[in-house]
Image 1: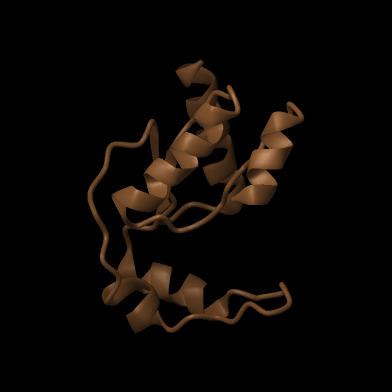
Image 2: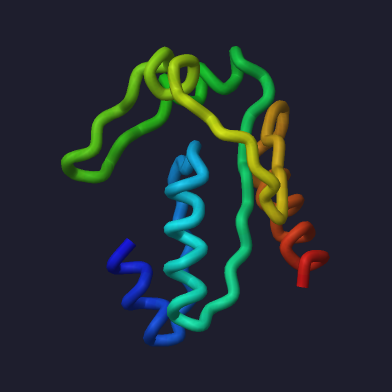
Length: 112
């Protein structure tokens, strides 16, 4: 979050792509943007098809040093998820990356 805060202070756009399943972490990201005087937009990206979601997780290539692929049970089934109301919700089930990207960009444009 410190890197995001620094970039926001320099006037750069930041996309924080992470799982934030609890209100505490979501609020921390909002505060990061707010304290830098930046606008923020919360987007929930999910896959409502459990089989497709699991396949994506298990086939995901982790190419960041120090990060490891997480197990389906720990990453999804056993995770605590506190409901929330993001600005945009995107369900990627049955959609390609290109379709999901187009839908997300259109939703972002409508939110301006």
